[in-house]
Image 1 (cartoon, rainbow, N blue to C red):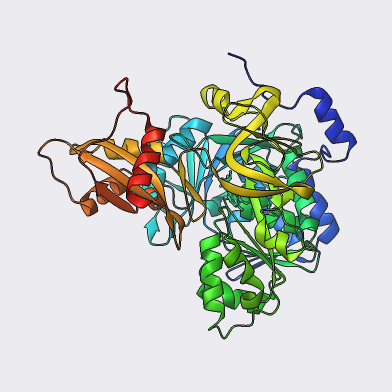
Image 2 (image 1 turned 135 degrees about the vertical axis):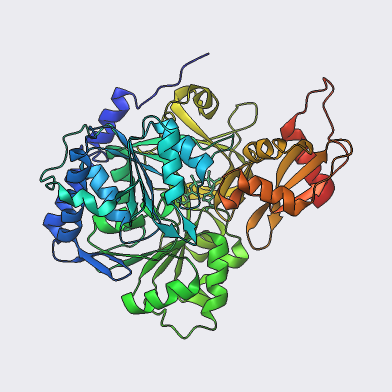
Length: 538
Ligand code: J2J
């Protein structure tokens, strides 16, 4: 079996440099440049905290100094699980400034995901919030310390037994210059949406990532005068880089963090901070449009709403301007790289009916049929891509890499798209077996494994079902053991108790008598999922 190229070939890397995409600047150097360019301007607003660019750099330097003084070495990984609080950006930037690699966990992740991420990245430190949305992170952090031999310290944004208060990082001297690391090396590990089992780790380099968000900022109309609201969980790639807080900071704009994406949390912030830009997944965009009709808050500063993460229907897309009074920008991206935007001056029909076109002239798009041959012009096919900011391999995952990358280093996105004149992509569906639940990708296989762990369950198949609000919801078809009995709420509670993010618990459970099997008696799960969906939800 051919081994896929792990990184960009030298000639392509050189051409990305020659074209000015890769600037050979590290995140640490980038942050210093921002402070030099925009020093006294407001960089971050979160709760009662307001930081200028100078102050943000100083915070990052303090955290970086503390982390290195604790014995961490350049290149080691730090698992970060923080909500959209005032701590998120200083911590992440501090880790990067120290030449350490953040590994981004979502606040919704629980022990299974956290242990998987910590072990998979061999994280040496873990940074958690004290509480968020009613959840106490301290026991989770203590468990991670006990179960992960590489993990030596867990920092908490507060105080708890066995954990180090984040504030203690300030006891050491701040780091005054960014760590010297190779800008072509991996800067952080992002988590994949994941179609099979647990999420895979996505290694993004300084060069490729900085290019992706710096090129995004002008496409999204960000300037020094802009104010970007971060409503989605900050660990997601979309609010991070499309254009995200990194894109906003790169032009000297103001970043405002909201702990919740709900209209009652975000609308007052839009009014008070004169927010010009934000990004949402489609279900939240629907909610915002509904709430805007009745709100007393002033939303008139909003200029651009980016919507992505899942398909935004043309009907909903057409309602953005009339209800929210701003432009819509569709965003079709992925943690692995490729990001597409509709442009702000595109005709209405393109903005409403397509998911945009790539950031870079050097993003290469290949649409293939199932047999691997290219589709005819205008026909739908499975999207494969490579370019200056799309990874060539997952981190430490040879098996997954054989499936996800093809000859020439193209990444197989699993999305079925149609190419329109002008290079615009229209997402039509997906080849992979996951549920895109309000933008959160849930692996069918992972949930099936959790169901099978229940003693009453003989077999289970999880499928994505169209849902008016969530876009897709998860439905588990379950065959019980002979004579066994369990009610759906108990089964859901069982899965939840296995320590996984709540958004992965099946939304619906349907008991059936038997699952079809293929001729050889082996269950073809992909076929089964399609059959069950057809039978029950056609
Ligand atoms: C249909 N499907 C979409 C869209 C993503 C920007 C925006 C989104 C993500 C993201 C991101 C879609 N219409 N507009 O990282 O930087 C589905 C596709 C895709 C998968 C990637 C960004 N926008 N999708 O959602 O890594 O199936 O990234 O392959 O979480 O989401 O998921 P993820």
